[in-house]
Amino acid sequence: MAKPEVLITGANGEIGQRLVEYLEEEGRYDIVALDLTEPAPELAEKTKAFYRGNILDKHLMDGIETHHRFEIIFHLAGVLSSTGEKNPMLAHHVNVDGSLNILQIAQNHSQASGKSVVFVFSSSIAAYGIRKEDDTTVPVSVRQYLTPMTMYGINKLYIEQLGRYYCTSYKGEEGEDSVKLDFRCLRFPGLISPQTVPSGGTSDYGPEMLHAAAQGKPYSCFVSPGTMLPFMVMSDAIRSLIMLSRAPEDQLRHRIYNVTAFSVTARQIMKKIEQYWPEAEIDFEPVLKRQAIVDSWPDRIDDGPARRDWDWHPEYDFDSAFDNVLVPHVRKRYENK
Image 1 (cartoon, rainbow, N blue to C red):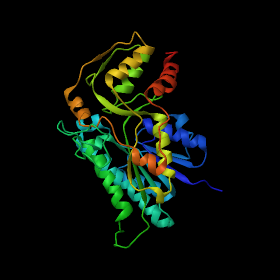
Image 2 (image 1 turned 180 degrees about the vertical axis):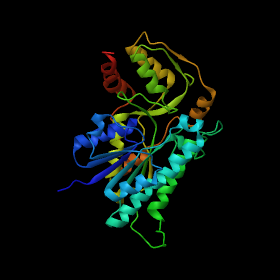
Image 3 (image 1 turned 135 degrees about the vertical axis):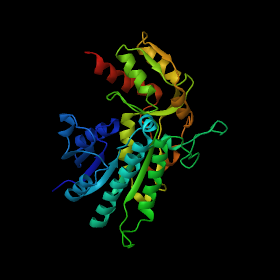
């Protein structure tokens, strides 16, 4: 009996690679992957099909839609925050127009099969926009402070609302009622992975600091020591994606959920790293534009709805994340280099 198919866009990214590995090891699905860049052979081998191309390429999207029938789509592809600020038009086209192409595949497959395709979208705390005068002494909910200051954040917020529209109000080209896709969204905090060196994200100072120390390289942090953000390790991020994708729809009281594990300052991350690499050369040289972006994001976010609706909980807090996951794996990664 053929396995159901799952599509992962952005499969070469930090989240995408780990998600492919998780699902391949589990063995429940045939994995179809898509990314702009060529995959490593060992990643491609874990998939039924790996398409290299742009989510803006309508011909490619039509081919994927024709040759597959997806039960779940994990939409992870996109231009990240720092890169998006350098080229906002590119960010808009990829993040919005490209996402619309993937949503339409999900909608068409839902209509063709008579069963809603589960569409899981990877959003971000960049969807928030905090001002200095705002009171954020309590964790921020999914409906507060939605005035993002970056093109990336604006794109994420728009796609969240576009997904909500597709699963509640969408009608086909002729205005007929249709079987609607099942849109679900996670707003991620900063993610720290021991396997993948990040690139292009404004919350990447945490993992960049870690990987630099493990390699004996100096690192200048682009935010101030007291800057606080919520974080989680990559394995918890993958768990949250899987858990949300499999939660019974009738238990979901929301379409958009926060997930988080721990909130720490850049100084706390530095001090933790120095416990393991006392010789680490870490200093702070805030970049005003990037600092302003981070300052517009909440220190803490409320993931209570995810805990209540689908029993979300992180496996790792700050200490156990570094002590049991990040440091051992990063050390192993660089020990022979």
